[in-house]
Image (cartoon, rainbow, N blue to C red; front, side):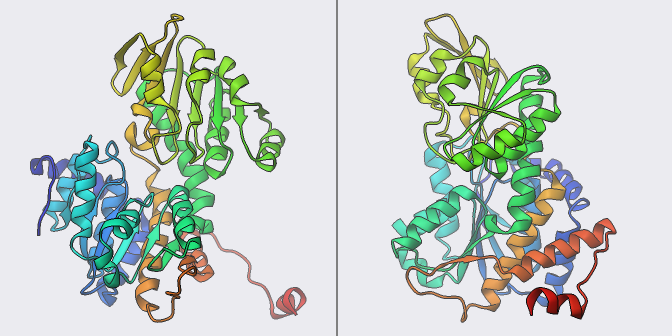
Length: 416
């Protein structure tokens, strides 16, 4: 076993966090028990790069219970929790991550989990897959396949696949209904406001909240902002999503206009340069900006720093930038994922579904390694419907909910 973590002595605090979420993740509980019996990953190395907090740690332990030799790192320098990393090392897993890693340290940790020659890759944002394809191509024959957690990562995969450069099968976990319909909407909606509220200690009610992007994550953020009493403005580039926002009761306008009225700005687009210099100049004194997209490029923090005549911390995890017009713009968590860099991420019950899909998709790849296409241009795979429905059935059963079943006559009526 090897590791590179900040402080091994923190493991007891991390273990408390992991044990807490374990009690609230019944789907993973069931899979852990099954995997201990069947050992689907026996003899296999799994490289995982996901936000390294308690829920991710429990997924790692579930995979390890199934026989996997785990090599774990984080997917964001500010979302790794050092006590959780220490607890995983104490439990016998290989962990390479620490909070507030420099770009060089972050990349070095990713390299450590790839250098072992993994058989399964579990990625969040595409950093593992990207580095494997650019600098570790000699290890690609070892890879059975992988799973991608996020919209951003899937976009990168699709680009690789369309160019016929993706070299092993990848499961598009984020496209599964039991992932994006719940994780992206309800998980992001709650965890973003948890991060904002605990960091700012300011009221949301009565404020103008600007949500950039109205995909599933944006829908959740806007819905929760409305519930907290805010006036919500949505900015979009997709006319259909913009129509949805209007019919959901929100104002829709260009960012250029929204910048003048917003009090709190949340970017949730997965794109680059969503809030930039010309927008900062239009903002009110005291405007707060944060990002809930995967990468820290949606809010142009570097551009804001160049414009500022004064930069200083305003509160833990908040930096204030004074402009030459006298206004101050505040950035939470350096423009990184606010729900993880300034909070604990999605609720455990939500990640229970997302990580159950991850675990079952990884098992599917192992069990179907000779059936999943390895033809160039055909390497991206949707999560099979039976996995999605299995997760839904397990969750409903835990809630004590029963649903109807089609009669044979109804099946014939619907499907012939």
